[in-house]
Length: 251
Image 1 (tube, rainbow, N blue to C red):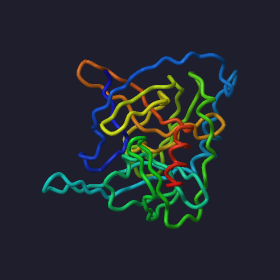
Image 2 (cartoon, one colour):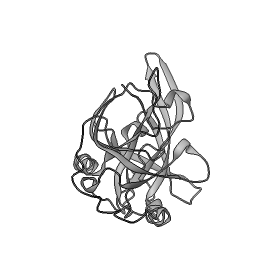
Image 3 (cartoon, one colour):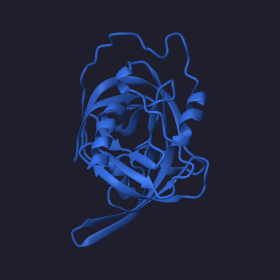
């Protein structure tokens, strides 16, 4: 059994996603060759230029009630702009317990206030909207159904909430159709990748060679006990995310 951590990074240690999580594997046959990468290499710079303007850093002030005690802290995560109204998708655990949310666009220093539109903890997805949408650039959403094991991917996000902008890492699709069980959700159809992702990457983009978002980075395997884990991350497939987002916005 692998120990997993959700990736809503935090400046307060108690926010660092230590939920009990189980990974259940399910095999997916490789029935055809990759459509994107036969004989070609991934142009990371080109992918980055296309997608980075659509990926934002999220900072939260968080308050958690535990009986008569109240814990306060700050959290960090990532979001993906999905329309020209400044609507942003992220993980539900990124904004869980948030009393305030701010968003910073790539290349900008000034954070903008945002508000939560809806959250679906069972699917670990949330939708927020920045109060000032000027300059926001919607991402191009792809199809996770077209992914094949071995496809190159790029992960973009607010890793460790480091100053100086977003972090970018490259990897491959390591497996498809993984299932994760957390305290609040049973997540199915997950994409497994070896692209390095860290706390703060939650809600960030997993992107294919065409610069299309194919997943939302959510969890990473961690070593514990006699289990050793290395470069095993998981993303919610964008096809599943589209359905959940549409339902949240329609409610």
